[in-house]
Image 1 (cartoon, rainbow, N blue to C red):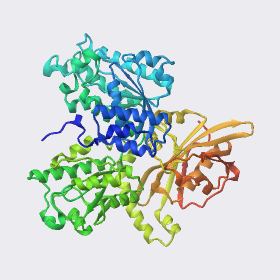
Image 2: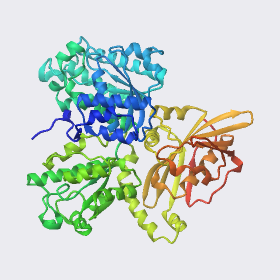
Image 3: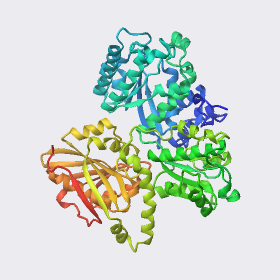
Amino acid sequence: MGFSLVDLPWLTPAPADFSARCRSLPGEGTSGHLLQLLATHRLGSREALAFRRALSRCIEAEVDLAPLSPFRLAVLSNGTVDFIADEIPAAAARHGVAVELVIPDFDQVVQTATDPNSAVNRSGPDGVLLAVDYRWFGFDSAAEDGEAAVVEGVDRLFAAAEAIRSHSGASLIFQTLAAPPAPLFGSYDRRVAQSPLAMVEATNAYIVARAADVGGYVLDVAQLAARIGLDDWFDPTQWAAYKVPFSPHCNGAYADHLGRLLGAIRGKSRKCLVLDLDNTLWGGVVGDDGVEGLTVGLGNPLGEAFLEIQKMALTLRNRGVVLAVASKNDHQVAMDALQTHPEFLMRSEHIAVFQANWSDKASNLEAIAKTLSVGLDALVLLDDNPAERAQVRAALPAVAIPELPTDPAWYPWFLQSAGYFEAVGFSEEDKQRAVSYSANAQRAEVESKARDLGDYLSSLGMSLSVSEFDLPGRSRISQLINKTNQFNLTTRRYTEVQVADVETRGDRIGLQARLRDRFGDLGMIAVVICHIKDQDEGRTAHIDTWLMSCRVLGRKVEEAMFTALAEVLRSRGVTYLSAEYRPSQKNHMVREHYDKLGLPLLKEDEAGIRTYGAALDDLRTFDLPLALDVRVPTTAS
């Protein structure tokens, strides 16, 4: 039994009336939730086109597409991408993004990029995908000087990219090149610099390195094509007839990989893997078979399959994915298995939330999300039972649930191929996330034993460090800005390039805050961006962005951050502070954030936008249950 990536087998088949459902949109009750639910199915080209048209109609009708995040994407290519474009909107919606596409004429990459009045540059794109392949570089035949050809091609690509950024301010998405499948020298190809294979591999190394230098993203088409197989990826007949860059049957896989990248850029990647236990993490039913009767470990094909599942889960944990358990089981019996089985790789300390009981699985997933202070759209459920999967999909459509085959040896392939945990960065905070969430359970235990809130907060031994935006924190800052929805006063989104711009502009102040307590380092938990203006009545500041991790709610961190901000603004000669709350579907919890801090409300308009302002000298002061360390220069640099 085998599976192909092009079939996206972790998705459920589309219902028979899928196209009819799409044609009925927009209609009463149309929402981003409904569109995302439709997109979670495995779609053929007709269904994908029906979805694209439905999404376009919804955008034109100004339907509220939340929780989908908008993203205007321009695609520049040396090939024809119209049919690929039909698949992209559904793939992006599947990963939390409502995409609008701008597709110029094919093979006009440089011309479109360098013309400030081109349709792409005038469209105000959020991102531009430079979807060129080896033929655009001239690597369809050997070169006289392979190294010179690579440098010339890469320079041409990045000159076009710089022109795009200069004219439109868009984020840049580069893609690696799939190598032509026919070897020139056979196994000697990689040792000959002028061979197409060697030039492609050298170009890919340049693209990855230089994309990081310019704050761009990378769509790894080379890896995707290698997994599918180069002979299946390329279709010379389609290229000769229509200039289609790769085989049409790969369109869905390409679109899904692009969609998950757009989702990661918008902060939509999942955070938590929830594991079933019996016949998912181990073979057998622990309540019936006992710990000694479970199948897991070396020397047995089935046991080794379950061992690989545990290894995969721990590998994900080491890169920042939080692990949880949701199982219909006796709590102590299941816990004993994790603690005592000699062959297990996973132990209870690896699990941030352990829900083993006889409640329905949907309720346990809701409890896990609440405990972790994340939305249901942060969860992925791995469960061998098709009935359980169907029930949870019906009850909690926001939870991602891959379809699984009967053979558990394939579970890691299905889960990791689905792209739920796509990343566009990997920071120290990411590495520590799983440990941090486990420490939250210890904090909760201390809270339950504390006499009152003040006693609890004092016992934590907290310290908050506030500093300006910098290069080491840039990736995490952008990540927080794009994924934080609840404690986010304006829900404005900024790319890494735009975050870097805040660092260098004298009329901007960007603050990042990190929190520690006696249980560990919670990492970066807050971001504030202020605009500064010199006016006749004095220097003023306006809070453009204020967001915080919900993990630190109720710890007086808001008051500490406000205190730090006021200190920094005073040092820059600011005398007046203004701010605003802009309502979204998810940020109602912070509607009265500034009221609680004592910043006077000046007005509220019909859209619910609340405007605040006061002289800095009139701001409240607070008694803080933590140490505050403000590491910001006293004057603007």
